[in-house]
Image (tube, rainbow, N blue to C red; front, side):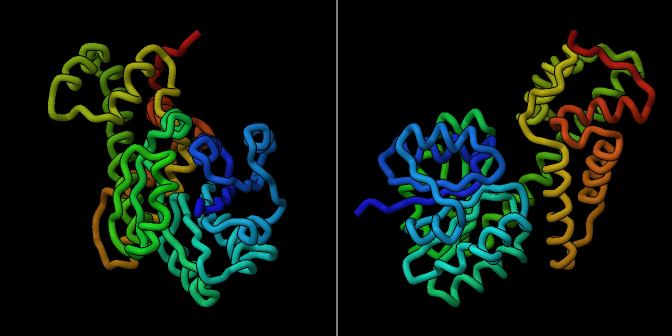
Length: 300
């Protein structure tokens, strides 16, 4: 029997994910989170709409959540009219948010008391891949839960990694984002160093692109930034700051010492405090330039 799918959080990533779920033949119920435009698009494609998480859960076998942070996930599940009120044997809640592992454990425990199960399936790649059905996901779930949700994940993911039991996905995603944002922070500082010391940034780009210091993050940020366009990587600075804050809390709770997490978080916090919080990651370059009173080219 085809599973009924619910989806809450139709933002930059969620719309594409939900669109692909619907296109592959799964009955879909959605709930607006912030704006109605993606909801109207999906309704036009055959989705149905409910106005509370509880109702979405009542009409679904698997509910996906894709919002910005753990407080929103907790409200959707544990708040008045939340998913928990419709918790039952057979219901699975899948959190695709980059979330705080301790919050995930709390939510999963509450759901388990009703008989419902949970999986964490945070995402990698961008809204472009979400629309194309080519995201990556790292899933923390019991084997039987993973088997149940995998056919739905396949509608919007190119690569699906079952990385362990519940919570493993969120932990791995935070470590992944720590490394990715570390690349971004180093890249921003290096580009500003080129401008300040008289190194041709275009030649620097050529050298790095041909060597071991190259990375996907570098390639997303730098080519457009050299033309004054800081929109090459579709991920916001304040979202990255939230992820690094979760990473630091997770590692502190695990008794891990290290300096790099603090340094990356500081770079993101400085950029946010300089007014770039709503901008995309390549604007770390602009923030570094502002700190150092260094001019940059800007797109006309």
